[in-house]
Length: 270
Figure 1 (cartoon, helix red, strand yellow):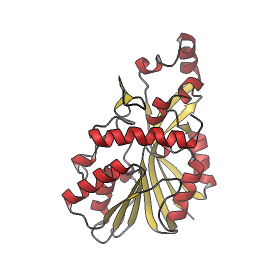
Figure 2: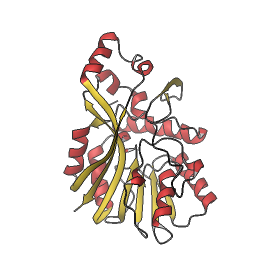
Figure 3: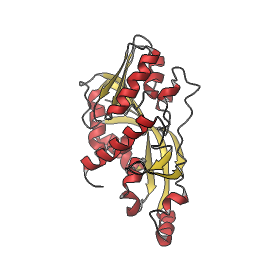
């Protein structure tokens, strides 16, 4: 679990399978291992409902988010928006409805199958100012000082080098621009048995940082006005925990881990 390339392959394989099956089974759906075998457990981390949002495209919503970054993104007509880990295009299409025809929205995803699915959805809605690009968040294929807003929904926790990811976000934002991301963080200590699980990494949990460390990384990247706009506790099912922890470890878990949270964070570039 410590090798960056191995982690990326685990995530890539899992989300490729999700794109092919068109069923949400990542952060917010039934858990499956890196080989696609369901373990019949669901995380109670369903993202907020997008259905009332303008621009919502049902085929683009695979249920993989853990928040609503578009809710606090502060889009303006004509903005250039970059969505990191754009999947089938859910947040991209909602953002497009808010920036209008004079704006532009670019989705970045490292999975070929997700890019293909997003482009299929784009063809259905006929947007000309939406683009999906294959790329990694640690090396975003976007020029410096380009975007007015960067968004991401439950994806940065899957990136092995989060410091590099936030530095990349800083690089592509225009001076004075901002980001809004929803992500998973922890308070307290995560047991080593859970941290080492490839299954839980692909399910957005094992790769989560402590909340204070997460916010510190954002600050170290150069951002200011860092604010948690929304926070919601997530419960891991006992059925899932018992796969990895014995009785004593379960007790230690309940004593040492204060909670797993979905947070939505905004911050400004200087």
